[in-house]
Length: 415
Image (tube, rainbow, N blue to C red; front, side):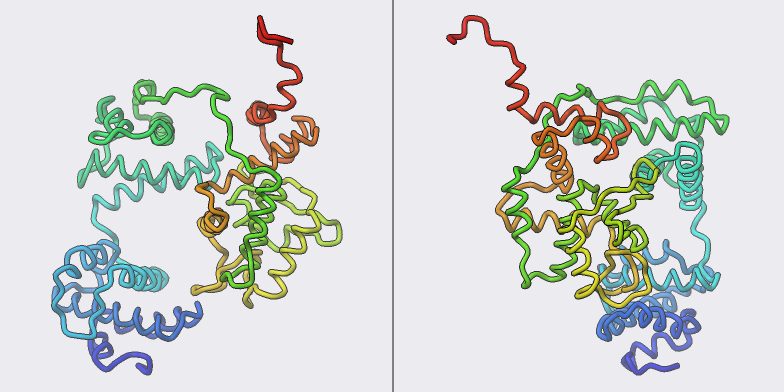
């Protein structure tokens, strides 16, 4: 075994352990991801530490899984007194173990979790398949609902089997409203939607739980009750002017924000853009993986196109990935996540001295600017790809100038 980037003690912990047959493949995985040499050394130290713990605990390969990893991080690391160079950083260890489990899974060597964890995992997988194939929900929506349902199932059933018919209205209300600290109306809404969807799923599976759906609390929602936060034309200009050469990954950040500010794209749509979606000759951008699950073709403004081209030509790292915006740090050859887009916008807000946090503000700003320029509401709905015209109606309230032109005079007002 080649141990050129491992110390002798790390190597000694791995030699003879249940993980030894997978070390070479593990190191190859990190190299393919173009991780820095120091990162590979740190992760190897974490795996060596984990291997030593497995040996001491007399855990064979059949017991190596995510559950064992969680025990190692939560129980062993806080009280670890293993000799150097054992790595004790929870964040580094979790990252290192994540790669290890991927390698074991690819080789078919990852053992099954305990029954309780397996019950929940299987239930969540079936629920996700239902939301995808039957409800046609977007990936982000499904991920959120799976996360909330997982928390509910773990709270309600613990280590026991999942029996949907034993769920009570009190269980649902307690989880949605918060047993100790009351949840915000927004959180009540999304948690309630997740549980209602789950009960519909169980109803279709034959469980008589349909009557429980009506017992889940709903927040008060007044249609068009709020006015969206927007940026003025000068503020958008200030935001776009906050990017300079000193910023890390400046061209990527600038191109992403231009997509948001010029086209009104959602952060998820920016993250999922592919090179094949851009028709440079026609000057168009295709969105085929949007929230509505339909294909839309938008005109690509010249300034937006130039920003994307600058990034592609001068900053995008060499990669075989067809995503427009890719990672600039290991693991390479992967597209960015939605969080990168959101954090980029937040950083731009901070540079302007603003307290805004939501990237969706730029989408709102595109709509209100179009309205002020006299664009019909139907065309605005088409640009934003709203399935219902009512969704776009909220922007009418923002244009106070046009509203005042049709407002009746207040009785008794002096002309």
